[in-house]
Structures are given as C-alpha cells and as structure tokens.
Length: 245
Image (cartoon, rainbow, N blue to C red; front, side):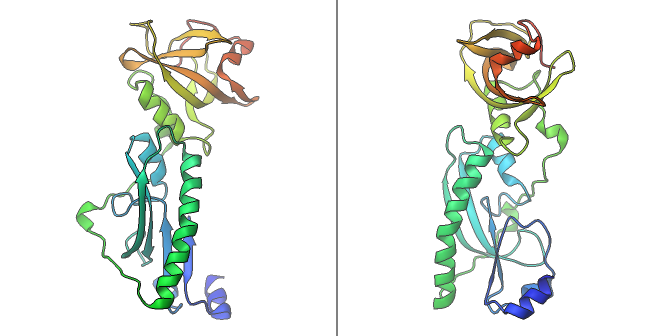
C-alpha cells in the first residue's frame, strides 16, 4: 500500500526507477519535495515505457538519462536533470540499461544535494518536441528478411538482447528461434534471396544473406534447447541453402 507507506515513513522525496504504473496526483504531493522519475531516455523526445528498444533499433546516435518531477501524466513533468552521451556502437539493450543504471547512481547524489540546498532548477518540457513510443508489439520483434539489410538486422537483434532472447526468426521448415548476436560481414555472394543460409561451418560460422546484397554472421542463437553458436544449427539438420522466412 503506497499511501500507507508514505504516511508511515513520511519521506522527504521518493525516487522512481522503471516503475510501470501511474501514481495518483494526491500521493505525488505527500512528500515535501515530491516524486522524481529516472527515465532511461532523453525527454521529451522519447516518452514511453520502453524507449531503449526503439532507440537502438532505429540507430540513434545519442542516449541519455532524464530525471523529471512526476505528475499524474506519464513522462510529462518538468525536467530537473539530464545526462546525455553518444550511443555506443553495437550496444545491446542490456548493456545500455547497465550503463544508464550507473548514470542514475551519479544523478541521484546530485539530485539529493540540490534538493537539500534548495538549488534545484526545473525546466518545462517542450510539447512540440515530445514523442510517445508504445511498448514493442510482437510483430516488431521479428526479422523481416525481405526488407532489412545487415545493419538493420543487427540493430533489431541488439534491441531485443537479452529481454526477448534476441530477435525472432523462423526457418522455412517452421523452426522458430531467437537470434541473439550477429555481425555484418562482407560477402561476394550477391543476388542471393534474402534469408538464404550460404555458410554453416565452424571456422566461418552461420552466414545469411540479407536485403540489399548484404550479409550477416549469426554468432549466437536461442532455441528451446538452449543458447548455441550459430554454426551448431547444423547439428539440428540445418543445411546450406535453407532460408529464414
């Protein structure tokens, strides 16, 4: 019971991190300094419950952590602190969450110091720059071999790792799996149908043609049997020439 806890402990402020439920306005006003949310993305550009997925998938160049005063609307309160940094190349969802968590520790100390000193400054969000991103639907987690090039597939895979065990993929025989780690590679195999497996040996790994005459090496896959290097799919009967669809 949140109300009961607030009445019992009477905190000066409440810090909220990755909390998915809306808190009633009458509770937000109970602590002396109110509630503050640590939002794992730049505001107001990336509102929503899972902005990191969309940021990684779209190849954004910048990531960040925003601390804002909470109101009765999601991600709408005035910004009090913000930390931005270049999006690391090849970063996964899990890696970015970890980095933002460390940033949050640093900003927590700064926030409490400013509150105690009475020096905290609030900046109202610009609604013209606001963008809301819904939680990714199941269809957003599948690799579209017919349209996605190697870099786009890598970004989707990274955006789904580890929380979805990678991006969803299906072989032409109906076997579904998560592709958890890939790297774009140069290939002389041009004009192959996207999704075609053209290499499945241990030294070079599982290689798959992608849209735009690009290709990837599949480093790690997830199946019901566990996590495996891509080339070990050969043990399950996967062969050169088979296609992901």
